[in-house]
Length: 348
Length: 279
Image (cartoon, rainbow over all chains, first blue to last red; front, top):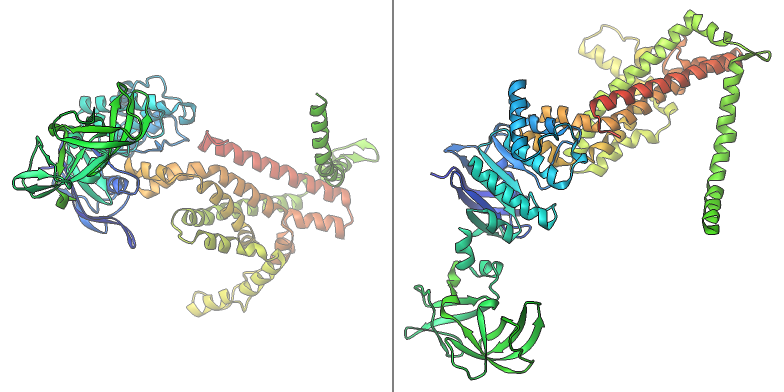
């Protein structure tokens, strides 16, 4: 049974519903990310779980118990805010100890546990500092310590790294993953950074307009997106239609395509990443050959991007700098069978 | 180099009128009053203050002034905190609520005092209500005593307190109360441990404004008080205008300034204890 379950949640303000009939399951010990652009409902979902907001309808089940109407201070979830939300008038020690004091834990025990958790986030010796006397990365770790020290039933992260610079962001996400694996907590992590969430999560739920389009391991999402939206999201730029005609998958121009991972159905949306398309000179023979004409070339540093017009639409191709094709040259595109992904258009 | 001097010259020129105004019309009179209270026929003396301090009447008036000002400050704090918190956190029509809170400030203290005379008078609505409900058999005297003065003070200065509190409360991020709740604090505890200490700088500003306001208010104690409920400000008037004793009036005025400065200092000290990070 899932540790946390959201059942048919509807939430939002007045006519502006952010979540409609939304459901989500999180297994114990998993690190699950909610990924999506702003306004997709990911933060709303997290706030509902934490108890900062209440759903219009539907229920939040935790460990078999309906906690939909349990007030936030009686839920035992650690929350890490985007802004860190450290109490500016309290020292690091008092910030971290706050949750323990609320739980009426003895002074000695508090000192011991705060010491241990500060050790864990490498902030020993900072007890007497105030938040404003610390760097962004250090504040972030105080926020982590404060959320973890209460031994929460689950950790909730709301874009915790978005206020850090790129280098620190990478360091902190490794840190968060390490802590999660060391302490074994269940985590839900909200972000709009695809790389970040793929690096850190066991499972990624990609959200779009208040629904989860796909929830899967990062590997699966990256290699077999289920909808066109997700395919776009993970870097597929070339889309074309395929229909099954006398057993063969055929494109609009009548060309038949071989596909490594076929699936049942009659009509499909096919997609391929720009870097997976191979560029040949016109007339060369290759697998799934598609003739075309170069429209635009863009120098990208390590790669050159070509926009190629074909009979079934424009294709973006990223090629190494080897031979350069000028605008107007005739070329042959190779769409390798094992790089083409089929999407069932009725799914999205 | 010359450019720097020129620029500094322009700044000085711009500041000069204001500085001159304050110096001529405030600092010089203030110091001349101060000196006058310490001199008697050209020689230094403490007599003017000695006489005051030894006077039982002055002691009473002094005590009443400080007591009523502190009481009014406390009441404004108690009444202002919930209002300010509500407006800053829960109100959907913030602008209108603020306008409502500030609205009394558009009326002069004289008119407000007269209004209280109507409301609290023997035939006023408060007395009528008390009698109708059966709490009292006959109308009570609610006017011309410390009660009516306190009511007047609180109504006079409550907007100042609300505005000062609102200023700091608006700058406390919502995240902080949510974080406190998430860590197990009820709304009340979150208010006590987070919102209150972070509002202290506004509280001090408000308290200083209310306290000095009450100490120096003249029309309110004059209209809502009586001869046996004099405060320092009415005493200054009495010394200066009725007794024509300008020196003694000046000494009382000096005491008023001293008390206000002292109390402001204590308020600031207290606030730093509650929130050591408050600037």
